[in-house]
Image (cartoon, rainbow, N blue to C red; front, side, top):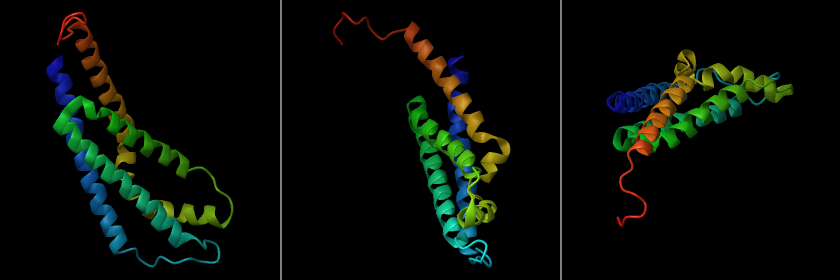
Length: 158
């Protein structure tokens, strides 16, 4: 069981790096070629919404890359950082769908598809939720194992 738990952590470390690489590539491509992006009468904040949402997506994929690297390097101790990133992404996905009225809302809605390209592959497959569950089950198994086999009794010197 311990081997399977360690493999799970390593697999999700690699997946974090893979999703981060794809997201980074898509983000760079979108920034480099934003198309005919311009504000309009009905969406006066489209450019600002695009760059703001794109910057948040870029921050998420960079943090995902760091958490993936740390999962590979230090294992279960990096699950907390992965949790923060994955919960942050899910909160962002939910919050960005929240209806905002007026010109800002229309601008955000129009920017949604092109600004979120970095994290969309994760959303399509449900990766944040799957990874969150799998990594925390792995951590729970390791914690349960460690509690059954303590290193030394607390009354003995270390």
